[in-house]
Length: 137
Image (cartoon, rainbow, N blue to C red; front, side, top):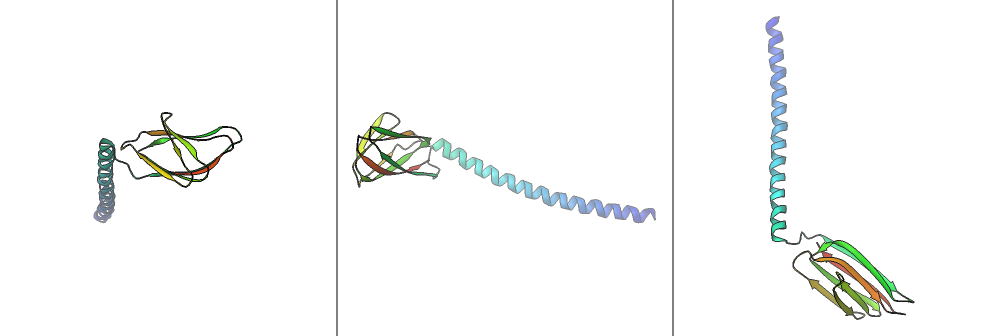
């Protein structure tokens, strides 16, 4: 009887160990995949390459007095503006670079690194514009 109990215990322990080994193998595989992902993220950070995430917004500015709409955003590498009108709009980037965008026209800015942190849209008195903004993180 004592031998039978020992055999059952050994079988139970063997099954437990096999299950534990299977789980540990899965954990090891997950850790290897995670290591590859972390390495890729570090490479992208070092190269300062866009990760491909897109930021998109449409803003309508209309005013009976000068009006400004601002976006404080996660830094973008590039940004494309499309003015759907009906009037022109003044676009300012990071409170420094600015340009006027005519109705029906588009303009793209690409710095090659994450520089665009703030975008402002300004319409003059009595003017209205709808601007589509698409940026890349």
